Image (cartoon, rainbow, N blue to C red; front, side):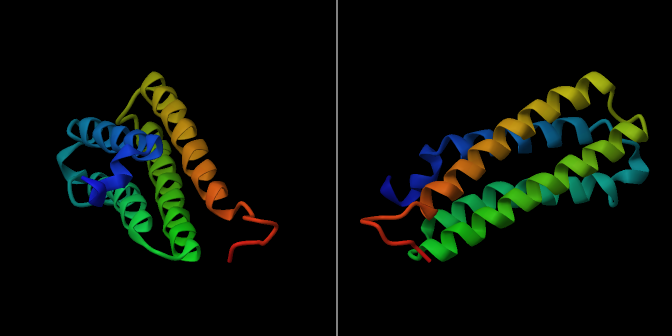
Length: 127
């Protein structure tokens, strides 16, 4: 359906993969992290896809870019939390490195999407 056009975005699909990975790895975190790091990572990961979807439904370019900025920020939040997970040895270095590649790819896609909305049309800047 056309209502769900955000689903066609590669950035959205990559963000969904981030969410899947976060849920997968946090399942093995210690039980005392359920309401701490694990919960925070899951909320931040879901925020990535949520903000991409919400942003793409907005009419103004400014709003679209704003929600993509929030999605990007949530992606970086998840990345920093994954570093904490590695520091605490909840995940292996290999798991962290694989996740880092996924985050870098996702970040490039979100960034590219932001830039596509900021491109001038007919010589005018979009605000």
